[in-house]
Amino acid sequence: MFRFFTAGESHGEALVAAIAGLPAGIAVDQTFVERELWRRQQGYGRGGRMKIERDTAHIVAGVRQGKTIGSPIAIILENKDWKNWQESLPVGEGDPAKHKRVRSPRPGHADLAGALKYNFPEARYVLERSSARETAARVAAGAMAKLFLRELGMEVLSHVIAVGAAAVEGEVSWDKIAQLYGHDEVLLNCADADVEQRMKAEVDKATETRDTVGGVFEVRAHGVPPGLGTYANWDERLDGLLAQAVMSVQAVKAVEIGSGITAAGAMGSTVHDEIGYRDTYICEPRADVGHPGVFTGFTRKTNRAGGVEGGVSNGEDIVVRGYLKPISTLRRPLESVDFETRQPVKAAYERSDVCVVPAAGVAAEAMVALTLARCAVEKFGGDSMGETKRNFEAYLRQLREF
Image (cartoon, rainbow, N blue to C red; front, top):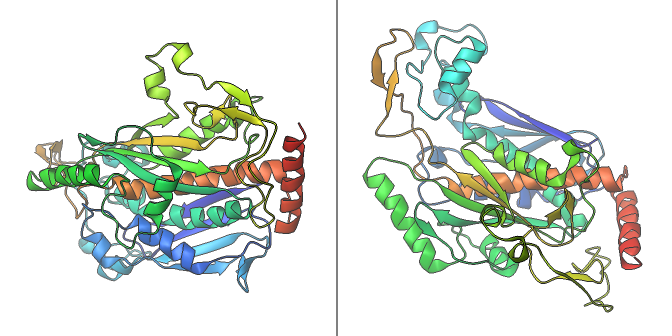
């Protein structure tokens, strides 16, 4: 069974990612893992925390001599800001006078609901765990999932399609999204340079007014074969798993698969992807990748379903969009109430970002990769990568012979 979890607090000593269920024999590219963590920290509108943290993945279990060994993988990410918080957030009892209380909950954040749930007199511990800093551990786990998926010829990337009122029109090709990955500098991770400048202006406007701005990112999974997920059980449907995974990223308030939102207001004849057939392949499967992206002779003119029909991947690119609200920590705080006095006050403020849409896209990539890895492990099995590949290649032969 494939599963993962994270642990750690925003200003604690470290974040931890634990992944179980990946087969032995996956080559672990440390440089790739570090770049994934770097990508999460980039983007115009990020705050002061990114100047402090330089995330590095310290793999302490499950990888030896450059490859997974089939046992659980544990990754530690040091919080460099910990040196400024050791006396405020000690593991032991410490000095209560040095505790940094969050005295008034922030509207839109987990502060109040979390304090009520866990019976905390203020929101410090809620903030520490609910913070999006936790997504660094998810990205580390997602990097391991991506390395596994690469062995099967699958890739997962994201791009930003809207920030505030600035938005990309039309579909962006996989090749253009892939080109963004190679950039050494990330502005807003938009494939359209002109739109990206308008997005930048939206961030500037929010900065000038001491506000925040949200947007929309799109995660694309390329090379996913038909057959992941199932229509047989409600809680194993791939679209449901993907929606929950992306919705779990902090500040995401809506998820769309394919053209789901516009499809709701359209006629069926303009929504569904028409099916054709060709009896020749573009090229033969490659041994190093597993497949060329052509699984059967069946074709589709469009991909409005976003690569998932009836809860099952259909061989087209999987397309998932996350709608990210403006983050709730404002330099111009909204009205709130003091936890102790119950009197009206302004909401608490701590160092924060103005726009995190590109970073949220990278975190969502990780969640999509982890979801697809889980489904691939369930379908193809195998304790070693060699065994998994044999099972995978046999399934591809089955598809070609259908």
